[in-house]
Length: 287
Length: 250
Image 1 (cartoon, rainbow over the protein chains, first blue to last red):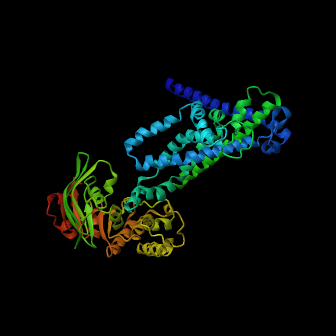
Image 2 (image 1 turned 30 degrees about the vertical axis):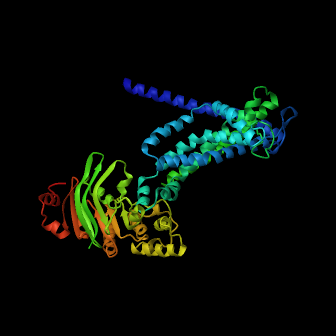
Image 3 (image 1 turned 90 degrees about the horizontal axis):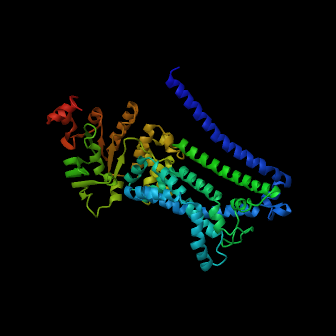
């Protein structure tokens, strides 16, 4: 064996070991969360966790329903804000703007993804929350505030993945439609969007994953009260906030119940990612 | 009778002149073939006739193109109406990734015809005109991309036929097809010229000789020679045309 071949082998083995350890770290984390979180769920029954309304860890009552509802409301709220704006922006940049403008704006939008979430939360506390309190009433710290800030936070995900999938639509579709006398908007609506559908859905689901997993900004602006909100102006606590707020002082079954919260969050996000992968794979197969 | 009159047409991509003073008249309900080596401006010229070059940045055009006596580059000209009247068939079949039905009625929808009954009549009529009706009438909801390449190309022609154009521009419509499929499309062109004026760009000189009544030879942005196909192929006036046709060049 020459020196070069030996080096090649060594590099291959080293890369294999590194790759394996990356995967195994993830696996260990997963196993750890499940082993910490699931026993208590079975001890008190899955039902009491998923459907219980009361969260009094010191009295062995671990109902997560208000938090599950809180997470779902805030996440869908963020989609109501983020999807229309994000999609409109992606369509404008791919189909209507000049190439120069796109080359300037797309990196800026991607830069938004790099702003720390605490900064978004800070902007929410300083500007958005007082605004909601003064104009719409309520405490200001609310589902609405969290939805708007999260909606802005998921914009980069939705915009950049939607742009990629819109740009992947073959030029020949655009030409075929324009040559039939269609306007750009007709072409976009009737050909480009259906062709890019799977990528756009994937972008929405990934944005959704980001929104449901976001913690810091939500803690700062959602109010964190454990109750089922009656309106979008009421405060809520999400699953992620619940863990972050209480982990610092929790012990014993309280601590295990927070891991159980993590398990539920984990499962929700896994389901979303599976759907995202399935739709984008299906989209590729259709092409 | 000339339906298309091109006068002193020049086209620039930035500083590069891709078409040089083209003068050409296209006869109604005839097939006109444009031949020449790659990159000589045939396709660019074709795309001037339905203003597809508008989609490219930095294109500048001088001279005039009149279709049915209207200057299509005039400011007040109805561009969308032009493209309805002057349909285009592309090099690679480009049906939309929609159902066969949606593909054929696409142009109708675009031009505001939404009546179900009219759409279905036009659907049948246009698919029949390209002899595709029998093959697809039981699977109109199937995705158009499941058809063979040649069926897709016929579907693209049906898609145009549905909006009843007057002129068909064909940009190497057979270059992605095998010889048998090519023969079918050529047969179809013979029938279509009863209704439409056809201009075809082709690399294939035999094809030009077989299907066309008039032929133009492009070289490096110049229209070197234009005339009746039999005359061009048997006694070209320009030595450059002769060199190309006899294979000494190109």
